[in-house]
Image (cartoon, rainbow, N blue to C red; front, side, top):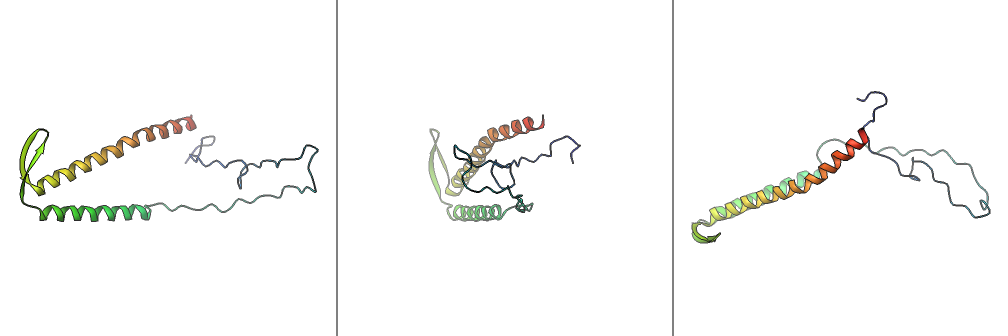
Length: 136
């Protein structure tokens, strides 16, 4: 709830000439309007499309896809139990394929999460700055 005189927090500003927005006069010929002119009819704003709160179906689909991939990785890891020699950072390690695949999957998860977080930092800073400009 906002007090009188405070912004409502809505960032929806209609564009000039858009339905419901400020009208833009039509271009005229150098000698004035050509042909009959009609007074501006009152414009009605189209019914605003209500967005329901909650999670969209895309989030559910991505979650199911990630779970299926995780299950497939676990099954693949479980089926590969033989020991192999792995050269890593200048040393040779002997471990099971399951262990190596688990480490690789874990490292990929961490790197993916870090990339996701790193890309969101500047976006959040810009959003915070824009919010401050609007509020005060």
